[in-house]
Structure formats: C-alpha cells, structure tokens
Length: 441
Image: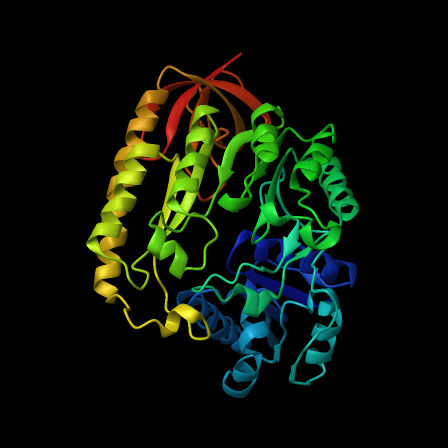
C-alpha cells in the first residue's frame, strides 16, 4: 500500500501555489494524498511566518497535527516560511516536528518524506533559486488558479520580514509562466490570478526592464483564458502602459490590488515605501477615471501614527471609494527596522484604529453596492447552492471580486448554470459586502 500524506497549507495565495506544486511532486513520487489527517501516515504543514500571529497559528497547527500520532500518523513535517526563517529554533525546541524544511525544499519533498519515515530527524537547508514551479494539483475551484510569477522581494519595507525569509526578488522566465498557464487552461482553468510579492516588478531582474505588461499580453493569447486578474501591484510601478493594458485588454479584469499601506507622507517615508500621497492620489484618480476598481491594504498603528494620520486615511477612503480594503494592526517584527522605532503604538490603540477605519470602509462599500442595483455585470459561477423548485441558486463573482478576500454575487437562475461558466447578471440587491441578482440569457 502507498504511503498516505496529508498536507495543511497556511498563509497567502503564494504559499498556496507552493503547496500545489508540492502535492503534485508527492503524487508523482507515488504517495497518496488524503484530506483527512487521521488517515495520514505523514502530515506536512506548509507554514507562514510573515507576522507573529501567523507564526503562532503555524505552531498551533503543528501541535494539533502531532496529536494524530496517537492514531495512524507516524511523522509530522514542517515546510515553508517558518522553517526557512526559524528552522534552527524549531529544530531545537519543537520536538513534535520530525523534519523541518524551508522554502527551497519543495522540489525535494519526496526524499524528505522517505528519509523522515526512516527515522531521521533533520533540518533541511536547500540550495538553488528557490522558485517553486511545475505541475500542480489545484486546491482552488477548478476554473480559477493563482499564477505565481516571481518570488522574494527587493523593497525592504521597514515593517516586513519577507526579504529575510524569501530572499531577493526573482522572476520566473516568461516561457515557464506561459507553459504553466497553457497547462492550467487545458485543465479547465478560465481565470488566472497573477501573484508575487510585487507583481509590477516582474522581469526587472531577468530582462533589465519591467515586463508585466508584455507577460499579460502573451497570457491573453491563450484562448481558454477568460479573465486575468492582477494582485499586489505596487503604486510607484503602475506605469501608463500597464494601466492602459488593464483598461483596453478585454481579458484583463478592470480590477487591481494595490497595497498602499498608508497615505500620509511621513509614515510612508518611515515605512520605506517608494510612493507619496500626491502620487497615490494621482494614480487613484486615473484608475477611477478609467473605471478600474481598486482593492488595497493598510497598516494601522505604525510607529508615529497619530489621530491626525488616521483621519487623513479616513478622508482618503471617503474620497476615493475603494471597492475593497483591508486594515491590519501593525505587528512589531524582530529583525525589521521598524521594530527599533521608539514611538510604538499601544495594542489597544491600534485595534481601535482598525475598527474605526473598517467602519468608514463599510459605509463606502454599502454606498457602492447600492449604486450597483440596476446594473448588469458579467459573473463567473463559483459554486452551486440549491434549487427551490423554480430557481437555481449559485454563488459567483464579478470583475471587482477576487476569490476569498472580497465579496460575492448571489445568482438566481431559471436554468442550470455550469460551475465555472460566465453569465450576465442583473443586480437587484445589495448586502453588506455582497450583491445579488438574476442571471440574464
């Protein structure tokens, strides 16, 4: 009988891609993948280490999975960012982990499992470029896939550990990306979501110039691909060519994720961000004029934050009316420059700022959704809900909704709609962050 392996994936969508490549490697190596950890001979926890909260979740998950050793499980293996950054500490202190590997070992996962089953407890330290690429077993809906176009980061924001975990920015060659995209399309994927720590920097290290726009155009030539979605575009690299491509290319949805983090010049400078308030406002103005929806994330309570800077951000939200926004309390991460700043903000104050800004964004989102009533949107059908004898009900998304992080559209249809298909929906209802409507033939 083949060895059964269970895999738990934590963290971001970039980590999810790593997990999907690792799953494919395991299957190719003769291992059987199981979703129930109680049935697994080996459990792998692919971890995130970006924030203290993520590290705690990772450790708690490893301890939870180790409980299955009283059943069938023989070994628990830690992979990913936690092992990459804190491998030596884990090897010393986390006895529940039978092997610890970082972000450079996904391609060698079969050998790691085999060696660990033999009884060897080991800290793995890989070599090479650390780019995880190849065949994948999708863990998303079968019509949607994340496409990781680079790894690492060169920005060195003062609050962020990513460059110290994932290394410097490394683009995947265009030919390799196109090969994987064609393979995904041949398997039924219709929506590609491009991700990297900074997608707008794509190609600079390999080709000496930014190549994201060229990459998008080549991906658009794949016939089966219907939507291309861009996440994590840094504002200072959103040039006119890229904006124009988003605007005029029918396969690129008019949506972009831009992690702004703040709009106050002093705080942006302390964060070591390359943008300023003026350029951010100019960019948002142009995107709004072209009806390109924006999602963003903001750090609340960064050292030096004041009542005035919070109000400045709130006024920005009211003025520019972002489709979606996330707010996160600043996390003081040892090893980053910002951790040494003297003017740290109390945790209770950070949480209050988060709550206040979410309330502002809630009102913005409500107004935008109410203005959508009566409009017609193309939607992708993500999942079937139920049938009441007259209508089929589905859950889907339109162009300004990225899976899992944004809202959704509840779709009623008089005829069955295949999951993964696209349909036109007449919006007739607005919920908190979601919409509802009827499918139109």
